[in-house]
Amino acid sequence: MDLTNKVAIVTGGAMGNGLGITKALLKAHARVYILDYSEELKKTIKDLKKDFSQISGYIVDIRDSKMLEEIVKDISLEEKKIDILVNNAGVAKLQSFAKMSDEVRDFHFDINIKGTWNVTKAFLPLLKKSKTGRIINLSSVTGPMVADIGEVAYATTKAALIGFTKALAMELAPKNILVNAILPGYIMTPMVENIAKETDSNNPEKVIEGIGLGIPLKRLGTIDELGNLALFLASEECSYITGQTFVIDGGSTLPETNSVGV
View 1 (tube, rainbow, N blue to C red):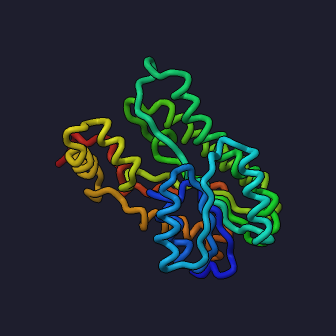
View 2: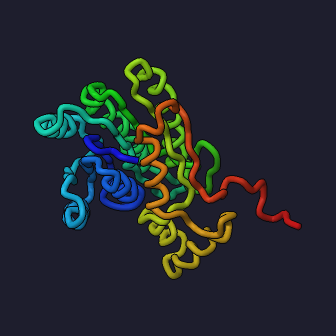
């Protein structure tokens, strides 16, 4: 798949799933701009420039619409259009519903939902100038399909992104902008590592091992595998698919129960 002359925006691209997506797009020759809140972005850009000259980035809080407007103006000086928008940035904090503060609830809502909304709205004028526009939203199997204890806020926001994806796909179809969502299961990312530490700070590796044993393929996915799925959804080969959800979870949502076997 060749993305030569395509311009992509990836939020949360400094690490984890976003980094896997960024690498896949770069390998396909797209020009990529990463938007990330973390200072890790500087190191990521430096590392990626060793192999890819067509990478740039901005440290940004996607909750800040004004900041996003300034970034769009800046990118507009270099690019007449963008072709691919990947809304990957997201947060997850495990906490029971009864104990969750409004601040923690709003932290999830403001980044996972409002942040995705803000970025999409800010870049939509540039995206409409593309003849093959693509929006890829990172939802999750958590919320739309499954949930664990402590994930009420996270699950709610990720389920909301499915509605956002479908409604936006309908609205943007006349502009030939395709809007789809990826629903990852357990991919080996810093977010999963943090969840493991929160679950058992003394032995997070054992938590990750236990997660893998509960997946039919007996392992967590890699950011490169997720990046390859995003690459397809961003490519010319994906020309008649919109408003759809794509699960990548190693089969983790397949078992009806893990306690029954033959």
